[in-house]
Image (cartoon, rainbow, N blue to C red; front, side, top):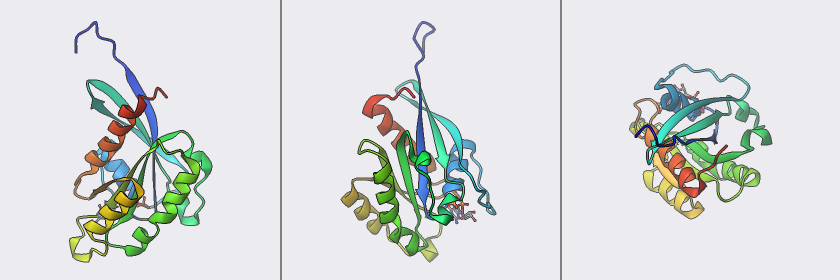
Length: 180
Ligand code: GDP
């Protein structure tokens, strides 16, 4: 980039939702700090971290919010969703119950956001192939029927984590280049 080019910076909010222990905090820490914590204990309260992605030569910064344990009480507040431009809806491919609950999370997300929110269905823990309970095709077809992006990830071995966030960030950017 040449010196006289204006550097534009975009910042927007993304939320991560899904059942307890599906790996939300670790997806965020892997993306924002390249860290994984095998013994993470959820703390109560909402937290966010930021990470930048370069898109078309522009720095696009995401402020990514983690429920930090609120979902254990099924009490994610509307403030959590407010102003979000994107959402990652996470389940654990080795626990079918977390996939069965995706519909409820999607309902909650839709009741707090409009249709322009970029939504990605994420099947996390794809390193646990031996104990898989949800097939790749089940994830894909649910995403197709609900109009969501879809990806399988592993926060443990880093598979697709960057890509998952990047697709959502790129979609938000292309949808209208938000300035907040
Ligand atoms: P959260 O409650 O959804 O935020 O889930 P955490 O990020 O706290 O993770 C819950 C548990 O799953 C922790 O013991 C993590 O170490 C583990 N975990 C998270 N992501 C992965 C993954 O991709 N693969 C495997 N095998 N374990 C994971």
